[in-house]
Image (cartoon, rainbow, N blue to C red; front, side, top):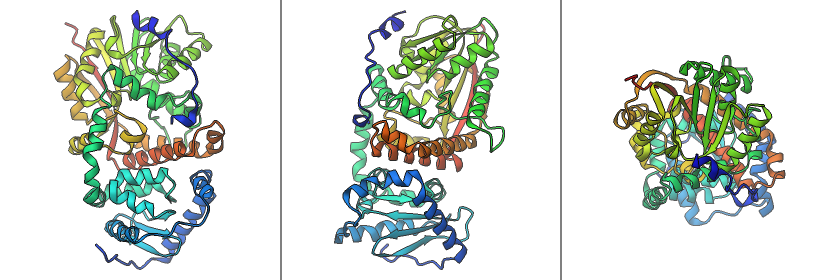
Length: 466
């Protein structure tokens, strides 16, 4: 197969990680218990490894905060007026030399969080680029929060606050952002570039937060206190059950990751597996893991775009890879899955989804993840997945299950591991900005899943037997 032979020419050299890398505000009477809880949470944040990393750049510049200019003070009033519209929780804004502002509603389910502004440039960033600017300002170390996932949840619930932040000056940046995103289209060359930007940061980096199986997708927990690794194995087993794998069958996996699904299916179900990725780093390590497991005779790892695969398979599985396909290419993706399946074959798909009501808007929006973490990505709605499968293939839906709340817990675990390994990440040569970007990414997504704005589904689609 041409895809396989082309692997031998891939450049797998390690690169330097550091290179990849309303005017009047409402005043609220603050309950003492909430004030105490906010202070305690802020103290825990200051003592965490992540806070040490987040403050490293500020320390390098000197501890004295830069005084706010007159425009900064104007923008501060604007941003805080928007945040003052929060009703799902209370926000305490702290800034050296300025009296604390208590914004939002008290005595709510989500409680209160503390946002500390380290640099008044934070207000400029939010005024100029809205939610995206807030993320970029976090990465720059201009602000911190003792409970970022809860702050995200507040903003998801009070969508009008988020919309307000994304209005005004922030709309001026949208055309250029949309042009940039359009240039990251998932053609064959574009997909290789986008995947490399996300997955080829280095296997050591991903090892700092993933479980030992290196499974980079949502786990399925039996109970809240269950360890991450068995929860990941349960998710893999559930996909195999969805496919009803039988010994001797040939399974195709589109999107290898680091090989956990292929290894699980071959080891526990006696199937032959062909798995493909377009990430050189993933391809290299997945092959090493297959050899170490003694499964060379049953697992073949390719470095090949799904559009270039050939052959016929009994079953196909794809775990959270569809988010890298792109809306434009979605019908073709399902068409290729059908083309590669024998009559009567099955496709099992695990996909991150967004509510149908938000899909078109999200598709047009270039958020922090699209701009700084996973270029070229998109989040489909369940309806969009099914209409694409209908228009692009003969596949028919047979089963669908949603368990997005498990992703919120998975992300919480990943972020906790990221924090615990903060020193190691810096020792490996990764820049502080990369750590903060992924810290924000995990918290941002955790809040979305916790509020049900994002979902996660497993689908089974069958190819007709005749």
